[in-house]
Image (cartoon, rainbow, N blue to C red):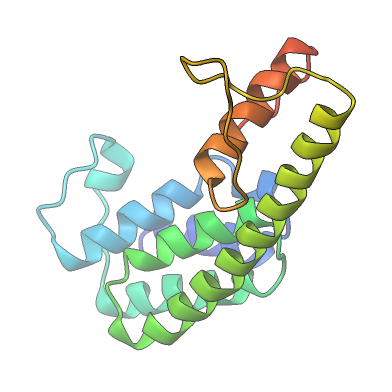
Length: 164
């Protein structure tokens, strides 16, 4: 096993937080891509010089799946799911559909809270809504992009920055 692959697997086996993923999860993804295409070029010598066998691909996959169970923070999950996508393993389709369903429900539920908070702020005459050219504004629970944009703008005006 290559030193980099071994190191990445060890890091995945110990990852419990988003911070634990910093600096190595992209390496796992690139190593998995390299396992499919030996000519894959990441632009980083440590990746490009590594040879990743199908056995190592399986070990990387297993370590990612095990890490996925250790934390439900969406930032942690998204990085692991992204890296797992590099396995090109069709047997993981059900896993991807499960996560898509779960987090889409959470996104919609969270948007309901964002919308309600915007409405409540509007009721106390806080300037949260974008104005149409005719001076009116239209609001909708299903207008997720607009709700997020308006929430960001309002919070930024109040010196609160919520990064993506």
